[in-house]
Image (cartoon, rainbow, N blue to C red; front, top):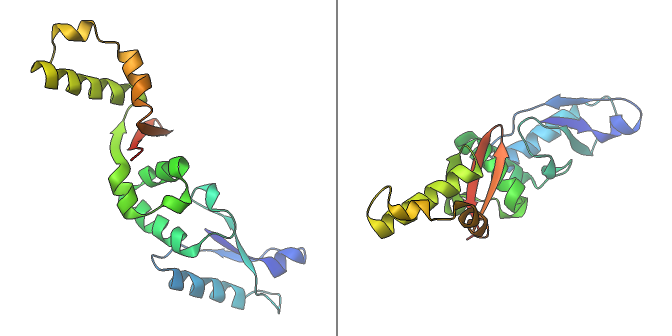
Length: 165
């Protein structure tokens, strides 16, 4: 992310630095102080994150630093699935426990997920992978009904699926 000095920005200039988001918010606060201490403006006290890389724009210019650091840590572990989680549930719900409870996995599409769920359910009731019930089963309505219990988000051709519970 790019930490920008607002004093320089407000006087018509641009000063800042690209930094990696650390795992700890205190480390990030220290990095912000270092950037501001080298500003060409003598009274540099205010800052903003003026650009991000691999961070949802919903964090904004002045995010909760604890949540931002938690996001960076979780992104290292789970990649774009964390971005999809934030797009669906919002930043306020970001925690490793909530993510682990909700994340079901990745599929090529929502239809691939719902078809797989339907096939598992049919097999559970019939004991067979392909039973005669499959030809009578309404996969489209099943997919619609399943969407009340799950959310999905597509990023780069991958469908990330989360339960609503």
